[in-house]
Length: 208
Image (cartoon, rainbow, N blue to C red):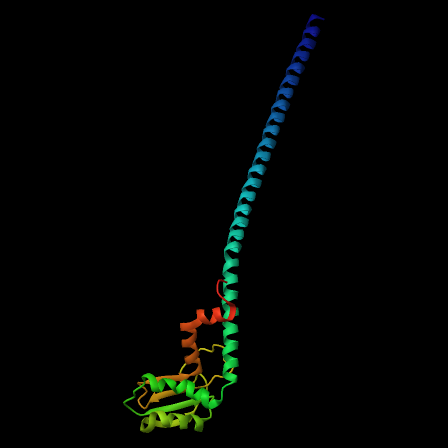
């Protein structure tokens, strides 16, 4: 009997010890689980903050770019608008001129600063060839070579500045070492380069 009770006590002690171990294991597992969950929450929070910072910086950079570009876009629009208005005014001015007056306008330079020491051939576009030849004969006399019709931009590259009348004369020596542009594009490009501000002020007033 004594031996049986001893066995029962031993069994109870073993069971109690086993329960304690199981409880310790479960407790540690729960603590580990809480720790893991806590670390996961921290990692999620850190990742969220990192993304928020990243997109916040991107958004701020985009806003700065937009803030910087708006004045530039406004300036570009204003320059384009003023240029278009000035060209429209020039086109209206040219429309009210006769062809003879426009030929006189482009050949006026021949009286001012051209002293050719060799014959010059004339390539004419836009103008009536005979009318242009007549004017050139008065200004160049025996130095005028052949006169031929051509098209805008064929002999020399010219920027299209928006004129409705692309007219002009290209003078060129026989050996092609000397070339001179007598064109509406040349005339008004020089005027725009020199007097753009004055033209703009005349159209829109000062202190824009």
